[in-house]
Image (cartoon, rainbow, N blue to C red):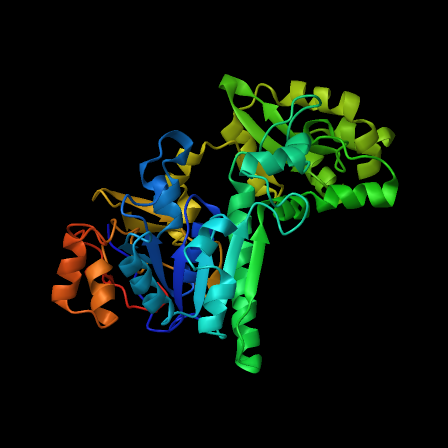
Length: 419
């Protein structure tokens, strides 16, 4: 696979160094966002590596997705020499990011209070299950906060709460951690002082369901779960059609209704006074939707898609995630970047869903092998090659450094540039 032609324009966070102590999804997402934006992100891992390197099933994609554009240093933080090395590394950093228990970081002397005494300009991003308060002693997971925070209730059918089909709180919690870090960087330019940024799964989940909370505040009526909600649109549904096909179709304005009826030859429906406006059609859904299902049942999903697209009407195929690798739009617009996995296999990975000055934020570093950059980083801190060798012999570092197979030069990318 050939990487996209790199830009020579520096990325926004070029020159910012991040040291992260993260695992799973939330903390690594924060580092991924900062790394994609140009920061040098150093992932400090235990000698056994981040546990997500070995996950199966739905967790198999965690490590490669959320740990791109990072360097890896594997070190024994329980040893005095290991902590010495890490503190020296933190001394070169602008940001420290972590998502372990507060007690774990305190025992290691890597909590915000300890590090801020050494460097008042340091920005410290803490990702937790809950912000400080009555719940902060609890162990949280994405599914835990979805259940207690109303999202699973809104996603499932009545009496059947269902988690969303992605790690939405972990991912967004990491994103808010990155947003907070960037805000703290801007404030440091004026104040000269760093600060602690706190992001949490539960509060993130509450933010996601805030629209339903406010619906109740405005209307006095509790929000129904999404499968049972009263649609604000007359046609806003998945239709099962010919050859077991499925397609989502929407008609959300009176103008679109007129276009839809003309395109499909439904003059009788356009003339029906009971369907004169969107609100009329919402009230008629109990008989309108079954009627449309019957009329559209003998058409192919591709035929319906072509008609809706030709007339500028909203539609969507029902797509499994694995088929997105072949999506023509993603491939034509550079939304998927070539990636080499830690085991050497080639794949592609979705990029951040944004452009800066017309360019996508690409890969500068593939997800690293365990301790791939360990020797390079220690030498840059002033340790000699003999000292590094001794630390490997003493078990402070891995016995052997992972081979460097994906430095920026190997990928043809320009460090700190848009791709």
